[in-house]
Image (cartoon, rainbow, N blue to C red; front, top):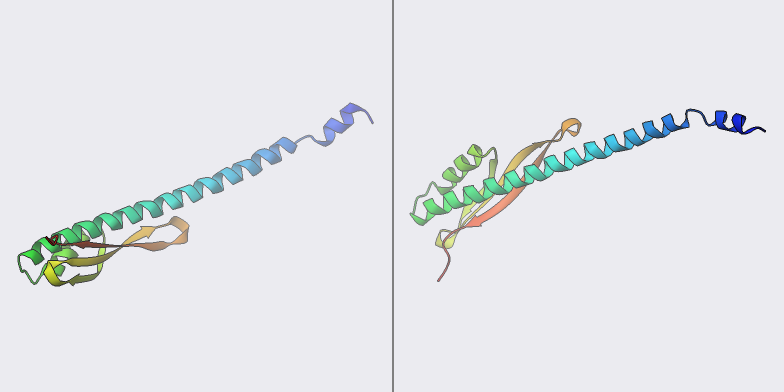
Length: 122
């Protein structure tokens, strides 16, 4: 068997390896984008929950009974939906929000967050 016949039998194998590597890299890239979208959604939910809780606590300290309505408005302005709101003793407000997260071909998911705000006890 001559060296030439052995080399010609492997001809084109690099093309197969390049295509396989390109497929793996594309899959890793898509996964990274989806994870990034989920992380951004979680950060958006946390921010919306924090701001809604602070706004509601400011109203609750003043004795306003519409503190949860204010929280809902602030959450909506931040692209979130208020899912729970409670005003406890001492004007401590706890809120929960949900933000829709678009994950491309996987559909739409939700990122949720909770926050608590109110005056600090002496």
